[in-house]
Image 1 (cartoon, helix red, strand yellow):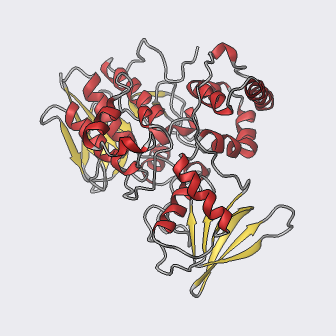
Image 2: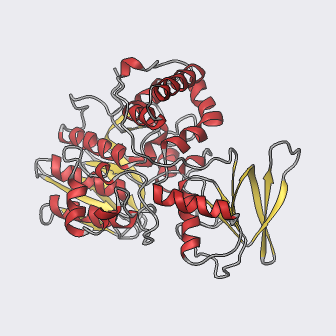
Image 3: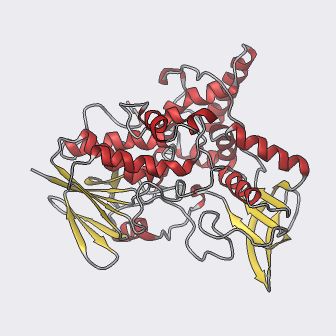
Length: 451
């Protein structure tokens, strides 16, 4: 029997999902990728054409397939040998090209369909899924996978500009405000510098923290038994801090510990009490992010230069709102120790806060439609839809679907670490194996390696 799988979203998550379905399936399946743009494998992160926008993980970690860790490196050596001479951090813009190649390599002729539409709904039936499209038509499928992302800024949200889709200022002396100081801010600053921007750039965030720099290191070997699972965030933070101090005193690097924790983060998150998750998001998430999501050395050097020159300034403060008065924008920023927010004048304001900032209940697109119909529910912290331990969508009554799954950023609230390629390809493997077993949980266990 030929199974038809519909994947909503054709960015990196959707493309990796499709490639793994073809590679791990028995050949008797068809895949329809529903992607409004018609472009496969790019999405926001990989649609950039700026060579200064680098992956923040090494190329050896970017294979689309868990079982073939050198797949991307081998493709890179053949198609872009010049990039392999510039170190392990390569431009993100080539990744869509790689994922298209991976799909061509794995998809049998006539088994992959690209549908340039938006997916607006999914309804589970007894023996399949009805997928609704923006033009009012529907697709019958045996299984469906959400790969739509989550928490992204809606078009026209206030007066803030989207760093990925809105143009850079024509005026090279324009005063620029960037909300957020993470990796998206880094890319935005580099885009401005590459076009010869001379004006002042100010980046603001609550903690005023910059991503740390990548360096050579060796991940510490940790087992789940080493980690105090289920402990409060206070105890867990103290344990991690003590571990880093001990390791550094012994001649190691703090990066060894951070990367040693990586394989266990989803398990830690699943076992973290709800109150501790809330405290982590309020007080510790920014510190975690700047150590976990680091800058490639080439980017860090350029950021250091513009910080030293004073063209870039990092400001600690909370962005409240922004308004337009004539040709100028005014942002209200609440600085530490201030009773009231103060105005900040700018010619353009870029929103670089990332995917984790959406905590409201009014979700856009497919996610909102599924919540409205009761086919899905939001996790308590507002980070994403709820999924079971093997990526199956959980409905309003708390029941896990056997037909609808999620991959990538949409699963952030369930797994926390689900936005990087190594995490996404593990989800893709698990979902592909589960679909191959008819929707049942595969014997190899869950993504989060829960007991």
